Amino acid sequence: MYEAFSQGLIDVQDEVRTAFGWTIVPDRESAEQMVDLVNVYGKLTPLWAPNGRKESLRALSQRLSEADEIVILGAAVTVGEVLNLPKTPHLIIAADGAVGALEEYAHLACVVSDFDGGIHLDAAAQMGALIVAHAHGDNFERWEASLERWAGHPSPPALILSHQTPDGLDGAYNFGGFTDGDRAVCFALAMGVEKEKISLVGFSLGEVGRWSGSTIPYQKLRKLAWMDTILGSIGMNDAVKK
Image 1: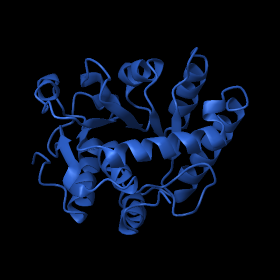
Image 2: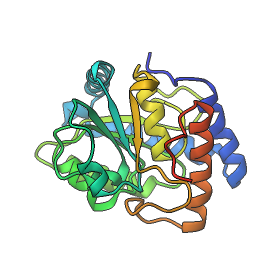
Image 3: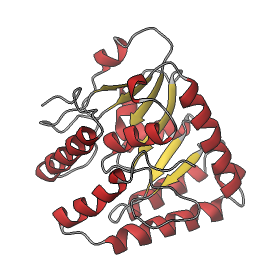
């Protein structure tokens, strides 16, 4: 249950590592250590304990699968685009810092994040937004610092943990994909959402979106090319601005 929509969405992660010259070891170690730390926090915060996280995932999966439409916000989304969303019932999945484009969270189902959303991610966490928290090889310091802050909130946000290795990891899931944007799409599909119910807003191939957080521009554009490839592999890159 809650497996990636297709094995290819996991296999592509090896292709990405090869393309960037990364090894799998840091990805695995970061994910294992994040699970261990969250389990420790979970002794005082039941919502972060293994059973609490499983229940959060189950409830979110049901909520997403029953929704009429899922709108996924990418890093290039504008506040105007959010305000112009259809008034029909829908739920929103925000890719990390793109949650900052929202004036309120009534339709927000979750934020899919690798912890570079800065103040916008922290604000969402403080307001109790569910975070699909992703560990990879070079975000150890970010997730460690963020989790420490969030654990100190009177009401810490619900967490679902994800990773990007082909190996099984108790307490975390590999939903497929690479960037926050395409991983949000992969997550929705893994939750049982039909492709036809998913709309992409603020996905761009040629620019680093304003909500991308701290990044190296030329490297980010290479990552966005992989995002486009991944979305194209599942027939969902028509909405990506070229």
